[in-house]
Length: 365
Length: 121
View 1 (cartoon, rainbow over the protein chains, first blue to last red):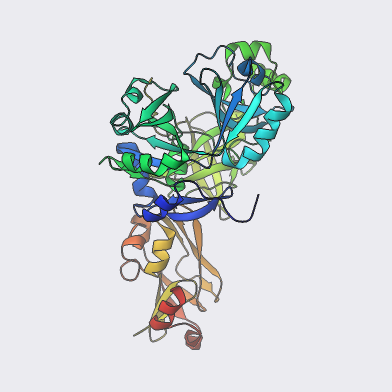
View 2: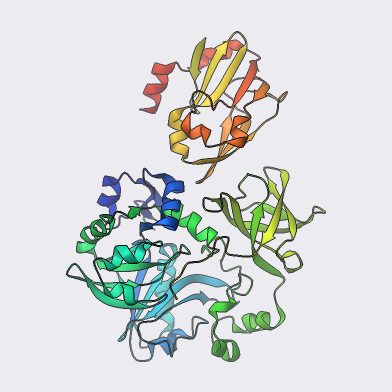
């Protein structure tokens, strides 16, 4: 990674909108705008927020049976994924840990993948090394924006009627004001919404069009993090890492029946055994009872003072209006309602295990 | 009554050997939406540079460092019921502590308003 952070096609727009820029995974990105994290978060839950996620890696896979071949690296069922459908999955390693999480969409004559910004440099060579006769193309000339929230359909469909026809996890190519874009009805906030891949030269113009809608406001990485945390969605590098398996992380829903039975992905032996016998620890939602947020790294103890785990993500939930967190605990302390102690600045603070997500997800099924 | 400023973005208003300590509007703005303040208790003694509390914003936790030596004689309870007051009115109602100064001569090492304005510009 070079020392100078890279800029997305929307950098000038972020500055013009008053974005507070920070270095994130080697990219200069807005952490918040003048509205502030709290306001941007609430705006996303009540209307629509627009995020620049161009730092994420957009990758195309071309070649015969690319979906079937990709199954050798991820535990999702992809070979029969219909055209126009997207699926959440993760690269696993030989010991069953998670190398990155990603979205795979069947775009007809190719697969369209979106991987984490911080893992682009790992994922692209990983695929190139393991996918025989598949052309792996990382694309650098397209921006990616997310429009999320209950008004997202209004915002996007006012420039692109086809967007209204998509349901959750569907994707299509369509014109937005004369520019061909890839529009996918998904996101990482727990709200209905879209991710839109746009040719770089048109990115600012189309983003401004979306922002012209009275319900749509720009939001930064700060709100993106609090939104995904309240929605119970894992952050790669925190909640899921090479040291955590998908089953420990509560992601067994993303491993479809055929793959559970047949295996054939890295770490299948461990993952299939964990599906059958359970895991020693589990990722759970945690509600601190006081007002102090419990952040990543905070030790979790049982009521007798024994260490039983660690917070992996935590902060203040603007919709919950209280601190929220996720962390790994021993399986016998993972049931909702379980009382725990969080060691915040040396002092035990009472907390309760709770079912995820903290807020109900509002996807358009 | 004189007000001093620290490089840690605190203001200290002094009357005799009693001082009121808070964070500046500039600091509050940098911190963003404040959701919790972890305050020390009445009677706690501290030296200049000690951590005397933590301000939690939606973004991150930031320590409050003591600008002088002293003893806490009152922690502002308003911040427990309404931590957001620190965003709204950090240089008045949302003071953090009243303290008894151990060595008022330490104040000479702090900035005045003009100095602080230059410091943050």
